[in-house]
Length: 191
Image (cartoon, rainbow, N blue to C red; front, side, top):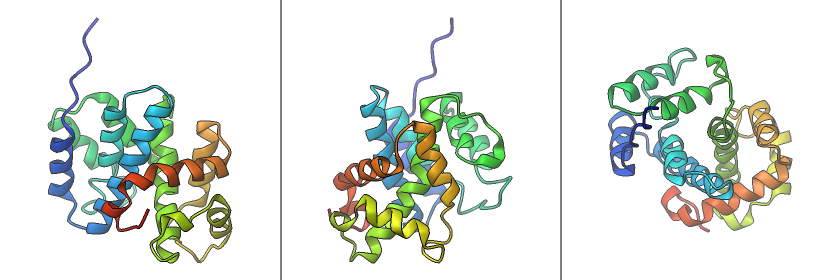
């Protein structure tokens, strides 16, 4: 049996992200999703470094290739060329539904669940004076019903992400808020 490929360092992943992503907002999103992914790994007794890398890199190609059919596909090509193992590449590809990659591992279900919901929780915090402490599951669920708020967030992905992890959406919201607290200042929020 072949040994699994070694994972690149977090610093190498950050450098790759910064090479392709100049937008401060997209970098903050990557940091936020990384924090949530690390916490999900810890909660499930899995590898925080692996989960964190996937969270950090899941949208690294989005600024250059935002189109469905190119986003993550171009990124996967780059990740392979950079020596990232298939487990990372497939997880990144799996968070975009249109790629048709089965979410058959916790890692794949986690990035799918974390991506849209984390972005939405941050958006709610921003309208609450950048205060993460003001974000509650109730406030997030209420804003999810407001279709004019954070229109770019796919509500179906948010709901299906929680279902994929087998947790009530309100519980996942509370989990995400808690996971973001340690990185709040890095992503422009107050804890």
